[in-house]
Length: 290
Image (cartoon, rainbow, N blue to C red):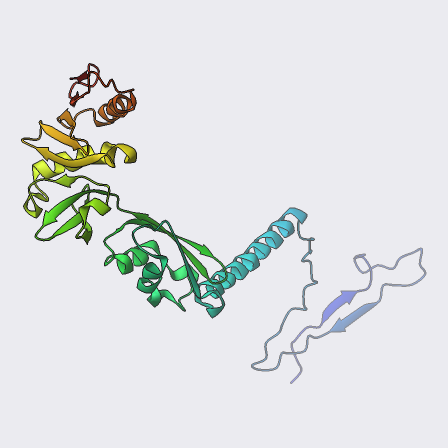
């Protein structure tokens, strides 16, 4: 049976409705072709598209910022490493403890109390730890530390200031303004400080605080001239000088001014004909001697 499929036609030039080109001397060539059937199950793919992605150079400012960030990260890592090495390295361990500011204590006493710090890295030593180790030494009022790499710890001591003696039995206790007992002596004449009347039972009471508050305000040279101190009330503090003269102090108000006025009165030339028996500075702007 003859095929009924009609061939397809393709011209090699522009369509001319089947007529010959009179100028060319030849007729259009007509060819017939049939498309090859695609194999069953095959997938046709389009030819690869040309690569049209354009690459642009990185902006200079962005590159600089990136380099700066990278450099900062490296520097931070180096610093962290150095700090870690300083904190934990045995190279910076405490080998020597230097002490200053001691009078009642000896540097050896402080160094002995701080023996546990030997071998500990300097950056790990804190003032609170030093204070805790020095608590048994009641003479220490304040303490600060200073690290001197690679291995020296400097300890600055501020001691309590003794202001009076308090009789307790056969000995005399050396006390500061807060009543802290700093030591004892059997010979009160060997220490140029006044004796507070009333014995150890007065320590911590209002009268004791009034007296020690006055004594703490006095210059050291005036304090050394006192023999004893007493108070009938917090408003009636009296002091005795070693030569028997009396100082009427009054209350704790204007302590600094009273101390300056008393110091000036004691430095005034004495009149043998009219010796002063009483220095009254209870009203410091109008002192009285009699």
